[in-house]
Image (cartoon, rainbow, N blue to C red; front, side):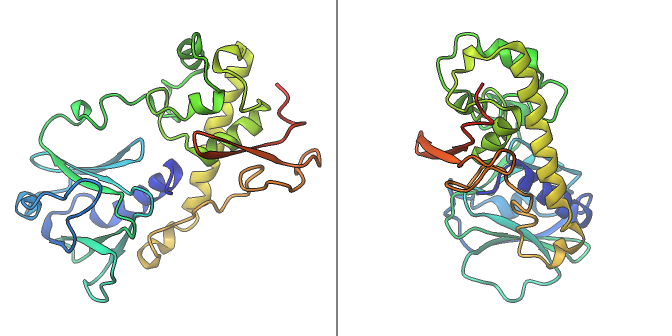
Length: 272
């Protein structure tokens, strides 16, 4: 599943080709995503200029003349830049053509993604108005995180994966950040000290920056790629390494399930 670093890499990959361009056509081959793509979308978007493309959490926002196109990659979605609309495959659901000749193709085998249009202020949209701060922003601090955790009787891993607390810290990066911070993922959020929250915030930022940098190494090939640049190319310390030796201490990496998600940790490095 694309997480924040992959969405950020996608954003950086598509911007040079379509940002600032005027939309010259929309082809919708399948309207049935997580929410149905509006039948009126081709007419609405035709000849609108894409002034800017930004990211909020894992949503890509195409800021146009009369509103914003909201795109989410879901579980299996991807975007890629093409020079023609040839060679359409089974799961190529939407093409957005722009005036410079390029097109943006949305592919999604499982169809859990979304392509929606809104003319309201994007910050007021129901999908976005409840979200916490961006993890790489100045608003995401140890003081902020600890203040939200004072009465929370849930594990710290589940806490930092709550999009109302902070966006974009998905399962893989939560496990990796907690390892880097030396914090046991089962520890209750309200039990962490101020020092531990300082280290955790630094670790979250470090892990995400490293992941974005790893994805960014494929940007020069984005136009020719499969739409999945740099997925998890960086070395993972604990995630997916059950039964293997910890790179730092040699202990066996353990795992457990919480909310139907696998959590990986080192019992020696993460004793706090």
